[in-house]
Image (cartoon, rainbow, N blue to C red; front, side, top):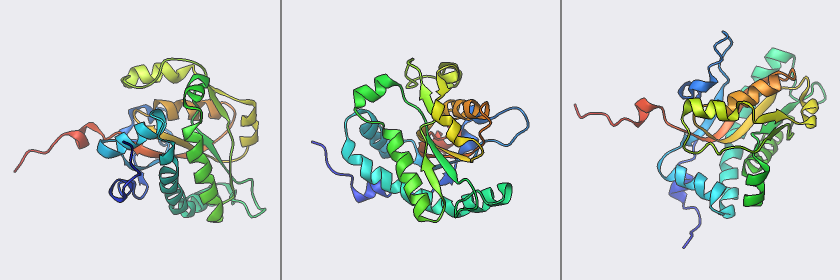
Length: 231
């Protein structure tokens, strides 16, 4: 029988930590910096079970505690985002002096939306934007991206993931609302980085600058998954 999220499992979703160095598909290979990505936990063990249950096994009751964790992370990131964005663009952080930040959820297919009856990643984006707003950083959610029907990413390797999403993500008309405004992407899991890299590229073709991404969890790097030999 399903049980509510226990304190021990909730505690695994900790402070946001940079994790883009473990996602090879985020490397742009053009000399520009890799997209900063923050994750709350490694995508392994109980955390993996939580995300799968929430996203694909009907555990909508987990939306609130997972959203709470994302909100806490967003509040912690509000200060660094405000300083970075203000320094780079003359204070685009709200308060009537700039266009503010746009929070864009990674897209899902209509088939996935129909099957789940909800859009889990958008739930996280809403909680992130609310938390940023309560921290004094003007932010709103814009559904700027859509995904065409295609093969699910689960079980695919790095190259297959990249090929699978390359032509599936497109910009919606609402992407025009992101023009001249910095974007924070939100997704559930960072694996190879193929999805976030594609989202960034699609928005970049519209002249939109993505300044970072926030995810619930990130797949551990191979070195982190290998048990250390006793010394």
